Each structure stands twice: as structure tokens, then as C-alpha cells.
Length: 407
Image 1: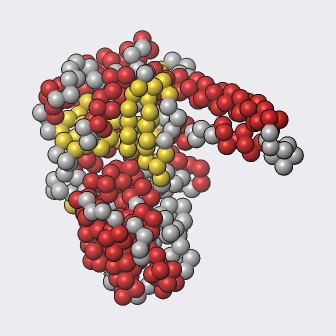
Image 2: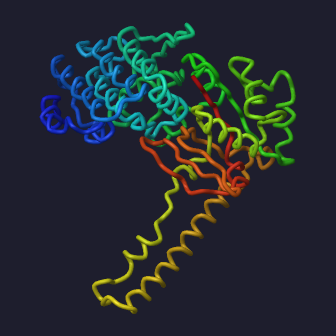
Image 3: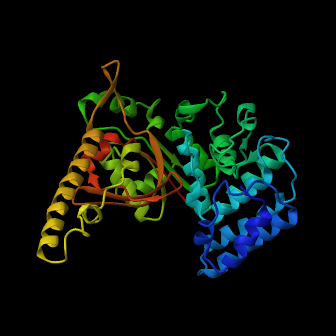
């Protein structure tokens, strides 16, 4: 960790880089928080200049303006409301996220819902993200476009994240989740969060999105009869479907052609695909094992395992490579089979009540279904990844719906 003066010396020769590549030169914990207001100002201006190194777009312009808005707190010596956070470090990390929104990372905390909502804000309404950062540090509360005030409880404001999560990510995601209980230590932090669809729906409505849909999916199987019955009742139906404003349900029916039950898993994921194609931002609740799985490259693996230094070029080396390639492809197929089996494996409480295995929110970048296979590119855990394509009938057994927002 170094002072801002050292970071500036590193960055000045790199000022020609486009925003994302410039952000990649900066680690969340590279900066020790020591900076004068002038140094922070130079840092923000340098990052602002990076947006001139790439073709402008309305959203990119909004994010560049967000950097200028951070000047509002660049000379704030400390926050009286979040005493464990260093204001200069929050400015530094928030600025990186304006250049590369995917850098938001929940780390070891179960804050995937608010963290990916914050990522969605950065990609659509970055001015709301910056407003939240500034108001929370200055006033200890923030107001949403709909007038709702978010007031963090003492457990959130008194927490010292250290390097367990970026301070800027704790400020936003921790405050949005706003759990009124002490933050646990160690492995138990994975259970700290537990955001549900109605929570994420509320975040989106309060942030001022013009249309919002919350869809809680369930499987079309006899053991999920209780879900189907609950969805059919007036009192409980809003736990499965929510639309803002109310005529958004008609939009789904008339513009996209979905009538009747849209919460059955296969219908739900098809609707999510159509919304992504229409330009909506879609947060999916999926199984974390699918999100985390990285398929091996059989060609690269085979090349690594052939003793090229011992086998001269020619037919013998080619034969060795083809044999090893066949082995690696079989191993890849087995890995994917095991993953699909995990997605399909039913889980129950007390060996009776079915329970879903979807446990992780992500933001979809692309989402398509082709020949019965689901293909996706998602943002999660501080980056972008493309999980292996899986059969839709397997995916929906470890999927519990989405929240989508537009405008």
C-alpha cells in the first residue's frame, strides 16, 4: 500500500489508456489513504481524461461526470458517520468502479443482491451511485429518487472492513442490505446478507427505474405444489410476481407475448432472455456452482501434458497430442455431467419440504437459449465470466427467478 503521490507517479505515463485498462492498473488495496486534496483532485482529473481515449457514449459520459461529482468529498477529512472508513480510500475505489463497474465484489460476504444492484446502477444510473457515496459519508443517510431515505444502522456504520471487502463496496452494499445485527467473523460472513427478490425489487423502484419486474421462479414438479398454490393466492402472489408500475404486467403480455403463469422455471428464464434482448438490465438468482465453474480448455490442457521436449516434431508427436486431447475432452464432458447432476440434485428441509438451490445473484450481460441450452455472460465476483452452457431443464432446477429494470 502506497500514498497517492506514488500512485500518481505510476499513472501519469499511462494516461493514454482507455478507462477499463487504466482501472486494471489499480488494485483496490494499493492505496494507503494518504493524500492531499490536490493529489486526490489530480487523480480524479487523470481518470476523467481516460474517457477521452475511447469513443463516447451517453452512459460513458455519465460515468465520467460521476468522477467530477466525487470532487464534492475529495477534501472531506473524515466521515463522522462511518468512522472506520477512510474517505480518500472510498473516493479512490469508487473512481475505479466508475471506470470499470465490474470491479464491485462482495468478497466473502453474502451481499450478492445489493452488490450486483450497485453494479447495475453504475452501468445505468452512475449519478445515483455517486450521490449515495457522497451523501452517506457526509450525512450518514441517503435519499432515493422516490424520496425514500436509507439510514444505516450502527452495526453497518461501525464495521471496519479492513481488506475483507473494498470500503466503497461495503459502504454501498452493506448499507443497502442494512442488517440489524453484528457482522460475523470468518466463514460465517458468507451467510451475512441473504437478499431476496422483493428486496432487490425495492432497490430498483427506489432508484427511480421506470419499469421493474420481480419474478420468483419455481419448478413445474409435484413437489413444488405449495409454491404453485401460494402463487395463485391473492395474499401471497406478490411474493412471486411484482411489477412497477402496475401496467408493466400488460407490457410483458402485449409487447413480449407472455400471458398466464410466468413463474414456472422454463417460462421465467425465457422471459429473462427476452428482456435482456430488449435492453433491460436483468439480475438473476442462480446456483453459485454454475457461476463459479470454469471449463478447462482441452486443447491447452493436452498441449501442456504432451512431453514436447522428448518427442520430436512429426507423426509421433501428433499422435501423442491427439490421444491426450481425447482424454482431456472426456474429462471435460465428465466435469460438465457432474455439474449438471449437482444442479438437478433435489434438496429438502427435514427430508420433506423442497428447497431451492439458487443462492447467488448475478448481473446478466448476455442471455440466450439455443437448441435447449442456456448460454450466458454474467458479471459477478469482481469480473465478467461465461459459465459453461447447460441444458435449460437442468438450469431451472437451481434457479429462482430474476429482477429486471429498464429506464
